[in-house]
Length: 373
Image (tube, rainbow, N blue to C red; front, side, top):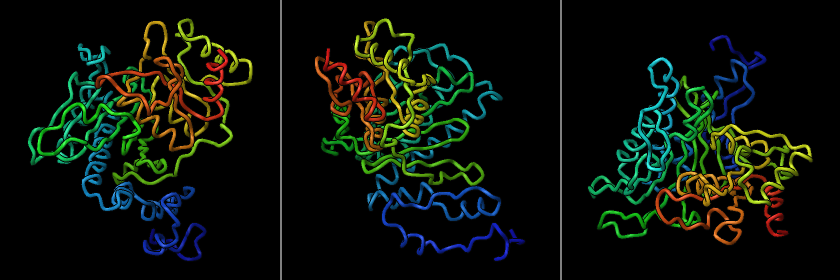
């Protein structure tokens, strides 16, 4: 660094933080990292907006929400570290138990769940937690250690893929309780439509660790710089307006038991130059869809009348993110009507719903096939 001068080709005069802030018209124009060269990389680390700064600024004085989101990013960092060391620490494989929804539990599922539960509890601002790995909601009864937020999370989405080093992630949604804080929260504080969700996001653990969040006003992407232990701002995420790349993502092994409109849509994709891309980890498939366009489907079928994905900690957060990024998130034909995922009313904490989400171009095509039928 000492050799960099004003004449160096990679030298850029550093603007002050105040000057950088004043040049921003809004959150969407935050300073993103520039193309990487050694000097630029150092400048980016110093100048790029960190997630911690974003949280403090974007929670508009809500200290409790800021504490919660800092607890979320801490949980994601600890999970990323555990996953990175899984192979060398004998953390691959099954734990010989099943979770609340009947799925086989991996060792890393248990670790990730412990991390998320402990981080949320220690934030001091949560009153009720719902995890995929817990049969019942976790109610925080100590008034001095609870706050106004109900948080639902899948601590390790796609964990069936973790042993073969495929990208996995964590997904979460946040509600503000409606009941009086004089008493402990109840399950009714979180069994509400996704339209009442105040924040959502996911972290993806792959070639890089990324965290994507929304407060209902845009979707923002951050990448973890392991050398400094901070998530740095990358960009505001928006699905391409024209629908983007022609990609459909679904488990075609279930094709025989889908509704006829879903079968027809997949057939049309094959006949119209669409590429099939399916990771089997919802975080990975949705992340790609947000960036490249296309559609992700996990519809209901003859075996699973409500689909397989859970409403509170998979359907709602991903639907909120997709819509905030300019896409659509629908259930398809569900409970006798076509509707938005965010309008579904869960009957219990591990309730499920069908998922059809992605670019408006493709989701509307699926829904039009239902209307024709």
